[in-house]
Image (cartoon, rainbow, N blue to C red; front, side):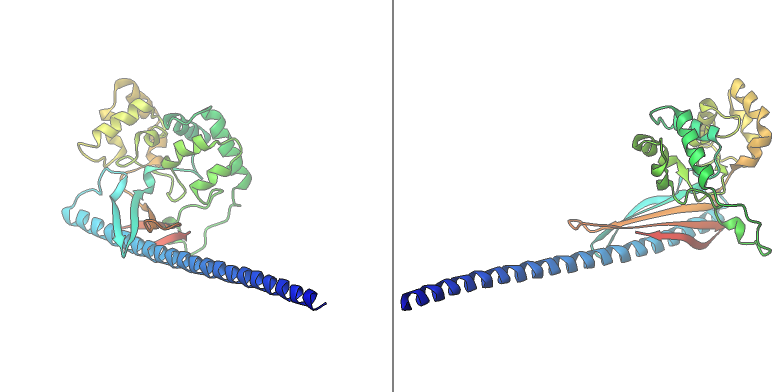
Length: 304
């Protein structure tokens, strides 16, 4: 009997040791998980604040660009990028800042089905461009906001992008019938931030080709001509075009006058921040309105 009690005590002691080891391992794992979670949270916070610093840097770069252009009495340039792409190192966080003229892109909420078809074809999107345009136009029509009258005090309204079914270009991926390959091909040429006008001095060829009376030949001719001198009026367009393209543009001049611009109004700002060797990143997208040669407050700031 005494022998049995000793055996039971030994077995109980062994089980206690096993349980203690398991508890210790669990506590160690929890501690490591807590440290990893805290480290990830710190990394995310640093990236977020670095991204905000990048946004502030973009604002200052835009102000400097506007001031320099005004002092020189020159146009704002013929590059889609309003300021050069900048890569900053903010306390060990790498920040990439991009500032693009929104009028150098097609307004996804305002473009006609024909303009979307042309863009898809010129951007080299796979599949049927007409089917792509129809799918986007149908999705947009089903979700377009109701029309509302402008408020009495509407001075600020012209500085805002018109409301539409798409709140971001990324939502295009949710449209049935639009493939990932099509999205990647057309997304660089789309925006939801502009007033729908196309800047003749900054828009790339696939975007220029969507203008009334334009085709690829006309778009290439305009892109070549503006390297010598920026366009100031729409009436300068026809003079630098081949004969056939000139006739089409002249026939469409009434519509063209309503669609073209010669200077940026909205600047799309994108900031991405990440720490080398650390997971995760922070990203900010915003719209900076350029009004009367100055930078209005930055709006539509979205962080993730």
